[in-house]
Amino acid sequence: MKTKIYLFSAFLILGACIIFTSSCKKDDPVEAETGTVTDADGNVYKTVKIGTQTWMAENLKTTKYRNGDAIPEVTEDDEWMYLFTGAYCNCYNDVNNVTLYGRLYNWYAVTDSRNIAPAGWHVPSEEEWKILSDFLGGEDIAGGKLKSTGNTEDGNGLWFSPNTGASDEFGFKALPGSCRDSELGKFLGFLGDVGYWWASTSYSNGQAYSRRTVFHSSVLEKKIMYKQSGFSLRCVKD
Image (cartoon, rainbow, N blue to C red; front, side, top):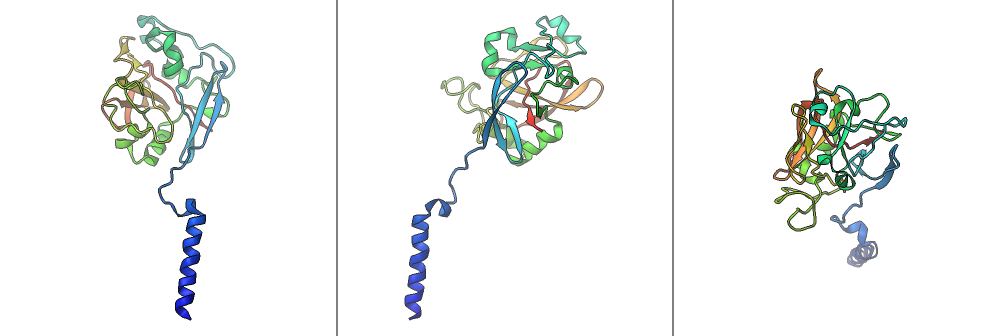
């Protein structure tokens, strides 16, 4: 009698696994929670939830603060390097780069009281970047997990080969928008080479925190850079 009961129980468990297959699989992919947000210019951005945070999945493009005031566009190298007020530029001063890479901003625009982020959002602090990095397994591999996949040679991505460690596991799509130098005001590197993103956290009177990842590394590196530098921006939900 006991043997029959055990066999019947095993049959029920097996049947449950067949009927409710999804509950018995351990390796089913988890779909990222996504949405959109709109900036002061009317640009609409994809968003993605990573751990407890919700991030923009595209670089910021706005030319206005949240209250509608214009952010000055500065194209001349000599003018950019001496700024102590907010400004933006297009990557390599080419408006055709904006759709993919967004715009570059100095740190003074990032922290202006008129708010560069869309309503309900803000520029992440260094601590918020660390929370993201820790959730992804630490800064040694976090850059790879955030980078868009593929490379410029295979036509499936925007990074130079080998685009080390790139998996874009959550749809963050970190892009190589290059940067603008603080000392000479010139653009450094090439599109496809490196991506820098500001943190709102100041380090000193002249420097602030940022994060960087490059095509030949999976690291999401913490950098302390001059506030006149021109970097990309990703905003995080309040």
